[in-house]
Amino acid sequence: MFDKTKRIVVVTGGSRGIGRAICIALAGSDTHVYFSYATSRESADKTEKLISDAGGTATTACVDVASEAAVKTFFDSIIQETGRIDVLVNNAGITRDGLIAMMKEKDWDEVIDTNLKGAFHCTRAVAKTMIKQRYGRIINISSVVGVIGNPGQANYVASKAGIIGLTKAVAKELAPRGITVNAVAPGYVETDMTASLPEKAKAAMLDQIPLGRAGTPQDVAAVVGFLASEQASYITGQVIHVSGGMFI
Ligand code: NAP
Image 1 (tube, rainbow, N blue to C red):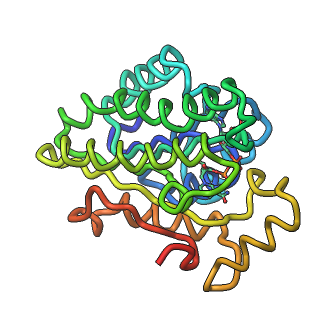
Image 2: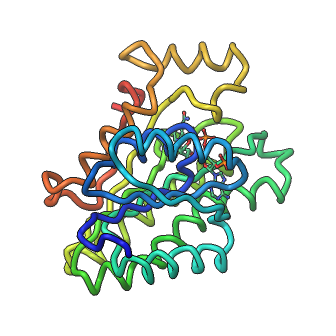
């Protein structure tokens, strides 16, 4: 039987990188973390072990956030099991970089469908439950480039700017029901997503960071942890930059 006194947290894309750090930051003896991944079961198992090491419990599922049906099945099963969802972190994201003149429609669609439509699917899936609870925390992972732009990433930048619009609209809509909705905009964070960037691009990015270093997944997770906490109950519709000052 599921322990119904536990706080229920859902993190999309928790198998690696920033999502994994968020899962660990939100884990604890009074919390159960559900997290999804797309392909990498081995990485998901590692996250599950790290959550357990942090004193928490977790359930993982392979869910493509771009699929309306898969997302519905995932959230229906959580709600059936627990009866509530306290925190949703829309973190799953991908890049398919390319210059606009050459960008393939497939690359545009995959990025928008995963990063933006995926957040829509998951937010819609928790909305009714959070409204009934008159409580919820939704935290969307955007990016500094969604605010300042970046050449070669029109699809990604559009998805991350869209996330900011989604955050603001849903924040206004759900505020009367006691639900806060905020975005976190990381800068350059060392994860698998950025590992394949050419050294020249990494150096150029570091040059733009006033604090002089790349971010860590833990830098981002700490802010997500705060936004999910009771101390953040009077903050909604905001974009919190965690970028070492890339955007000031
Ligand atoms: P990452 O290391 O590449 O990890 C991406 C995560 O998303 C993985 O868990 C992956 O699952 C999951 N995922 C990918 N496609 C998915 C899908 N269709 N459905 C469900 N899950 C999916 O990326 P990251 O750097 O941690 O990025 C996490 C978030 O932060 C993204 O939204 C990204 O845009 C944002 N961000 C990152 C940076 C940065 O510098 N790294 C900067 C700003 C914003 P699998 O393991 O199964 O592939």
